[in-house]
Amino acid sequence: MTNADYPYAGRFPVHRTLPERGTPREDVLAELRAMAAEEDAFWETGKCSGTMYSGDHEHYRFLTEAFGLFAHVNVLQRDMCPSATKLEGEILAMALDLLHAEAVTDTTPGGLVTTGGSGSILHAMLAYREHAAARGLTGVNVVKPETGHPAFDKACRLLGMELRSVPVDPVTTVVDPDRMAAGIDDRTVALVGSACNYGYGTIDPIGDLAGLALDRGVGLHVDGCLGGFILPFGQELGYDIPVFDFRLPGVTSISADTHKYGYAFKGTSTVLFRDRALRDAQYFHLPGWSGGKYMSPGIEGSRSGGLLAETWAAMVQLGREGYQAYARDIFSTADAMKAVVGAHPELRVMGSPTFCFSFTSDAFDIYHVADLMRGRGWRFNGQQYPNAIHMAVTRPQTQPGVVDAFAADLAEGVAYARTMEAAGKQAFSGAIYGGVPGGMSLEAEEFIVSVMDDMLDVELSVPPGP
Ligand SMILES: *Cc1c(COP(=O)(O)O)cnc(C)c1O
Image 1 (cartoon, rainbow, N blue to C red):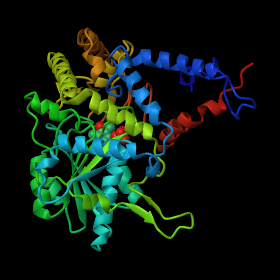
Image 2: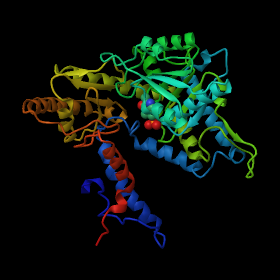
Image 3: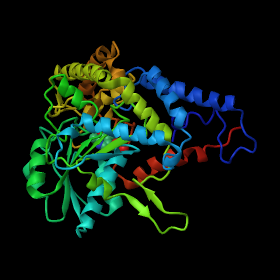
Image 4: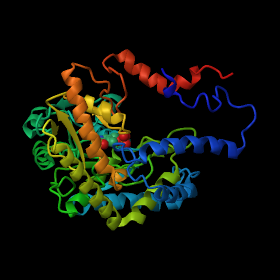
């Protein structure tokens, strides 16, 4: 651990116990404001991949006001907040409409608002498991392309389901439907396809997977956590994006994150079902409990009304026009950045990505490039097998000057990588989801545990101040 890992320890009190007396509100806020301002300055440059989808402080102030009006409300107690019924229902209706649930005629579509993409995937997997169990089918499995998000692996581990991972084509980075077919057996409840996957920003052949799912009588979950709120607008803008939503009869559920390209605050996502019966299979109820008949529509119990309010506010305020305008800027910025990468013969964009993309090199370890660009304020996500740099283009990159800075810094990075490779030097950056930390080899389980322990425990072990 270095000082950089706990930069606030020397500046603000470290609380190891509840303070004996309370702290004035102004002092509490001053401390928070200081940390927030410094951390915002880091991404406001537009040099951070993903994570800040809107990046617009005026938008954030608007969401904060909407959130504040209902932050204290528990939407589990619906008798006290009929507004939640309106807000949640409308969020779902708008999301279903965006993903063309009107094409569904044989069943009634529905959805759930969850706490994030992982939550949406967990609820979908739970629904498939419970729906199968009601038909007497247990010990079930799910088949995903290797590039499918780890949230599927996490959900399957939590739910005691088997996850079958199918390798993708190394050139296109998408899955071959025949290989998916080979993974199906009589205990398969669902296939997974990504539109798009996080790693490469590429879209699996959802049309083929939907046909396969129908053919074999299994579900197909389309992971639109990343793409769900932007790809439909890319389609409208004329980009070459295949149909991946409920217009395909084999698509039985879709996850789409409001807290990514829906431009809402972190803490909400939607999971949408072609047939409400699938969603309803995972409803929880305990009618015989002494504390009263208990029921919850999903895994969470108490939930904040603020999250529904700010998510609804973002969607209604932006409207189709607002989302399309943002999508236009993001797609054209991504195209410009891909062209910058493509101009270097040593670099290779992987597959045919859309608004987010990855690139690698066959000439040198691409992490040398990340090392140099890190020093210029860039923060990418690192990938492995093969090593690659991931860039999710969001609104902060659409600011004037960011693409030019990318071009200049990338050119320097390539020159640096050539030199380092020739000198036989090892790169410093490594592959970790959500950032490229320095000097890490993430192979040892012990090391992985220590990274997570540090997130949670480091301030406890900070030496007491003078
Ligand atoms: C972000 C993401 C997820 C997981 O979402 P969280 O909100 O981080 O839980 C799942 N799938 C894809 C494709 C994603 O990009």
